[in-house]
Each structure stands twice: as C-alpha cells, then as structure tokens.
Length: 231
Image (tube, rainbow, N blue to C red; front, side, top):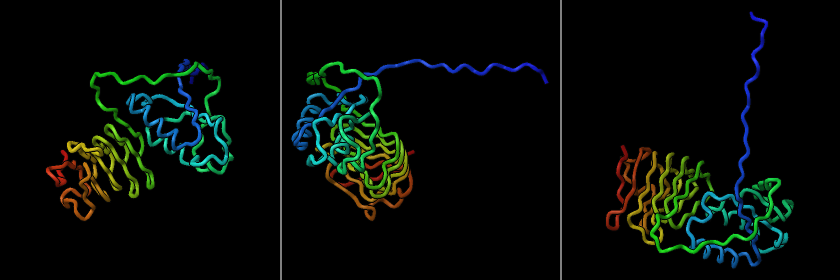
C-alpha cells in the first residue's frame, strides 16, 4: 500500500437569492381571503412558484378563523416558506406545520399584483410533488392538477381543468368544475371512491370493472362518464 493519502474531494457551494413575498392578513379573515381571491383572479398564476412569508403581526391568539388561515392559503396554491410575527404556542395554530422564516431577509417595499392583460394565456397548472394523504383536499379551480404521487382513500383532488395522477387513485378526483366538459382524469391505477367531470360523477360501484387497478383515463361523453384504458 502506498503511504500517500488522496486529498478530500472539494465541496462546491455558491449563494443564490430569491425574492419572497410577504402576506400580512387582517381581520376579519373571511373578508381578507375574499380580497385575496379577487387579486388572484386579476392575475392568475401570480403566486405560482413564488415563496411567501406569512406575517401574523396583525393577528391575535383569539382572531376568529385563524386555525383555517394556513390551510386556506395552501388550498390556493400559495407556498408558505416561513411564518413570522405570531406565536406558535397559540392554541389556534397548534396543528400548523410552522416553517421558520429564513434569516437575514430585508423588506424590499410593496409589491403590486399586475392586472391580467388581454393576451390569452394557458391556465396555470398545479404540480403536487408528493402523495395526497387521507383527509387532504387539493383545490385548483382554474387549471390542471398534476399529482406525482398517489391519492389516498379519504383524500380529494378538485380541478377546473384535468386531473393527472401518476400513482394510484384511491380517493376522489373531480375535474372540470365550473363547466369544463372537456376535462379528463388520468391515473396509473384506478381504485377510486368517486370520479366526477363537470358535475357528472360515478362511484366505485359504477365504474368499469375492466379498468380497476389499471392505467385509466376518464372522460365525459354526453352526460355519461367513460372509462378507457391507458397504454
């Protein structure tokens, strides 16, 4: 054996900065969420892919509807990177997954949500990079939803466009809400509790048995759901 020793591999690191938006909710929260929905409608996809800091400095431990604030933001596709200005010991937020805000950030001034222009754009797609667990409800009222994992029994995915599930569909998938009859549902394994497109639905007992546990697409033909095998 040689008496020489190889030097350790060099670990390459570099810095990268991102702009995080700060949302500061105000009471009553139902009115604030309604105003947020209006802003999102004005500029669809504005929050997509953007990290958000949730500032609770205007909230109190007893603020009505506070327990539902974080889930409501997540249902709107808003990615909360950190939470500040509140107290994680408040009973109202006891069930939250409380991410710590990144250190060293500085305020950069107010951000204006732009108005949508008249140029037609494709509706935004929501990509969920994990399985949807029992009790979870994903709502994306404008575009498609892509689930890279499975949808568990007791979970539900709702989309204005189509629903694409790369794993098994064991819960409920609802596509085409708001009148999109061309929406479809795709899954690698159909074992659903319920599927629906544009208000027309089928329960587990009403689905085509030939497609059970197999790659399947669901589409609307007239007023009937059709089940077709995927390659």
